[in-house]
Length: 331
Image 1 (cartoon, rainbow, N blue to C red):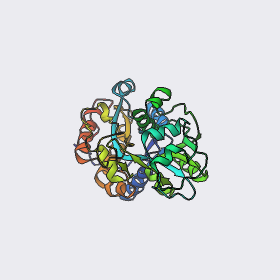
Image 2 (image 1 turned 90 degrees about the vertical axis):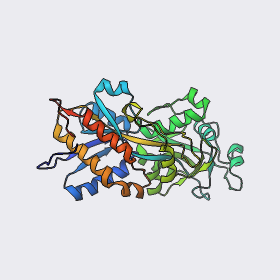
Image 3 (image 1 turned 90 degrees about the horizontal axis):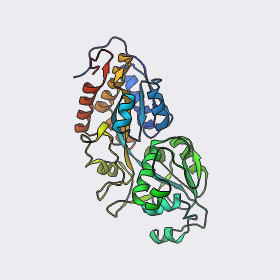
């Protein structure tokens, strides 16, 4: 299937996850240049995106925390992955360069639990021999809004620390044991860049854009791994998208020698029955264009485009599930 020739392009609106905002903004600019059609995306956090699509105030919502089959059915939504990327621990430590700090998942959890309070703590010194760790307080920076980035991060911490799982758990919003909150990936990046001794977490594109130092992280195979598009790709390599309802695969703590432990997909949410089918069709046109033309732009920002077999699954889901009020497929 595909799209019938349309007369005038309709501008579309989306809202949600800050994780994919850099690539959606880049795609939107290129799409406007290519087609003349606009895509306005509000980077307000996954929680806000779910609320706005549920209320039908936008044409699509975006969330890094996938909804399960029950949640999707309750509101009458379809979900598909649009892009993959990585969440990275970032720090600001005078005299310590990016990539010099190594962390394990358990140690990262202990820092966020408030158990490891200073940068020269024995546990940090043990896995960072040769790094001059200052006697400085650790300031934890976390998200203050409902966030899919937080979901991925806390989902990972729950997998690698039994204490974190029982005391805090996972979610788009959790009760953080310690630290200060910033709104959006932008807010966390801003705090970390301003506070000497800070540690936080952001999507990798934000770390690069803001020139933040990032830590290496030990993966499930015991390897200290760097965040980049190759380590994100390896994390998604064995995912079974077809068998997961709504293709809601969670890619944290995946096996693989080079796999980055906090990798995730970002998902698009749309109504199964489109009250404004012309807008719904334009949303699908935009993502169809992005799947065909947006790979190089994604690579530039160290996101990972969805693999071709997954894109084929996504297009099939569009045809089967997204319809106008008369029951006719809009794709």
